[in-house]
Image 1 (cartoon, rainbow, N blue to C red):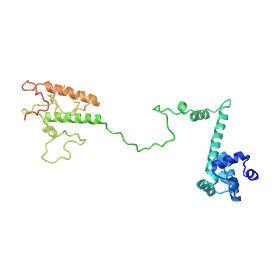
Image 2 (image 1 turned 120 degrees about the horizontal axis):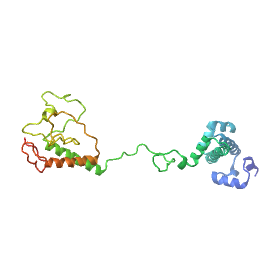
Image 3 (image 1 turned 180 degrees about the horizontal axis):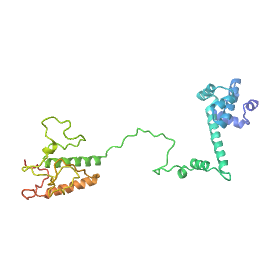
Image 4 (image 1 turned 30 degrees about the horizontal axis):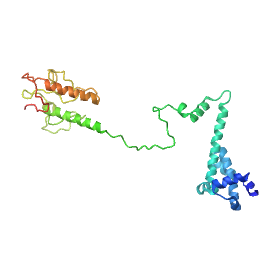
Length: 277
């Protein structure tokens, strides 16, 4: 019992709990072990009040290297006793806050901080989503990027085929130049401009523009107007996927029933047929 009192242990029951929790035997302590235990007790008492390593080491009369060694080697169950010291410090801070907010005129900042700490779901910062936040798990920023679904890929493929069909019907062998560079820049000599190749002729009548979203109301059959030139650009409105598909179906119906400008007869039933050369 004299050894336990010297180590700061008041009862045999407390000694039995410490031996079970820390995995030590006080009866087997050497004088060096007893001195280390007492210095650890001084260190932990100061750490529970200030939670600073330097003040705790100074109170115990040891260096920071020695304190680090206790923690690295878990000397005499030091890490388990350190967890208790951290808990004592945290609870002491909460007690101080509670005493302050119970004053007749408490600080609004302290009251708000205490409410956010204890009731984060109700008084925490507002979030766009209502899902509770998990502060105990780190989130990886390298999450897999969202991939295009199979339905979206099929829709894009259908749009690409529809555009290609309109190009074939218009007699275009190459897609129109949609690059941001001005016409003629970087072109070699002897190449004709896109406006010259797309100009209407008597043999090849004007055909509807293959550009999606372009209005067909400029002429009776979707060609160029009297006062418009082939290289006149019209900015198409921004449409979503469903609107583009509806516009494509509407254009195909108009192309199917629109008469030729010279003969007045209807166009062929298949919109895939090429215009006569």
